[in-house]
Image (cartoon, rainbow, N blue to C red; front, side):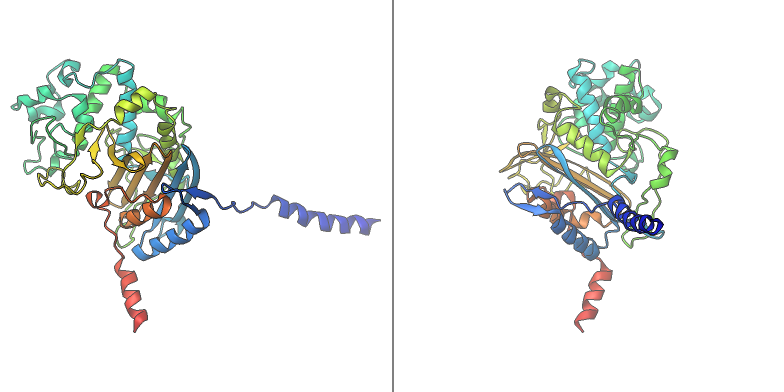
Length: 404
């Protein structure tokens, strides 16, 4: 009898162990813009190949079909030197993804009547703009009196991306506000001042209350949180050397957000579904504001003109870029910094979107091919974005050696 029980236990225990083991995720079928589909298995095979060819250290991908997240996957390392794997919940630097979140907040406030896009921002401030420490440089340029929130959010206020890029290292209005597009973090900083002055609240608190909390983005913040340290990605340069992760203590609406692939995919889903923003606010935010005619986005103050993007009617809305395709309107937002490359694009009519986050300076070298692979997006203005396909020298040398 004792032996019978022992044998039974010997048999049952392994069965229990097997039952408790995590099962591998079933392959997902992803729908693409042209009506074709691709399996997650094929995606993973091809992405791994692309990353190896271009020395991309870490990469996360989220895909949305029917306005819902259907696939998330991370590849490579969050810290290559330490051999720590990147996951969908690893803290990554959002960079200018932050601007899209901020634009969503402002659009909420506009539809609530708290702000008006076309009122000169000076009317919202209790003292002249040049009386604020950060804006003393504008004291001799009365054009600041014409700047509106719309101009700040669609990047037509006339500022360089950052003042330190100017020869004078000072803030300057480079052209008549509202007359043309020039991407500017400085403009978003000024919009932040207006929002905080009018609402009497800090931008970080407003975004936390209105966007992050409702969407369950618990691993996202507009400023550094010590709790992020245990699962943190560092950036990597073109040679895949770690570049650390800057712990930004101050909230900057232009680019201080830390987030994760999972969290930011939920933000995109919230915008697509108009669950985090009303349909009216979404329509205001994503209406084309200013045509873009420069051949590249950077340098931002370039006056060179090109018709390259005329077929897709490249333009800017409030905080987001916009273009037209045979599949309807698309809107996008990127995020760049040393060692970090991010991109998101949404095809609203097709209810399809992609989020890409990379902690590698080489990440954007595969974005063009990646977008085509994942959803057959051959419309994103990759030359304007600077997403030039490029293999890394290590791989090229290896290929040459294998041919001898």
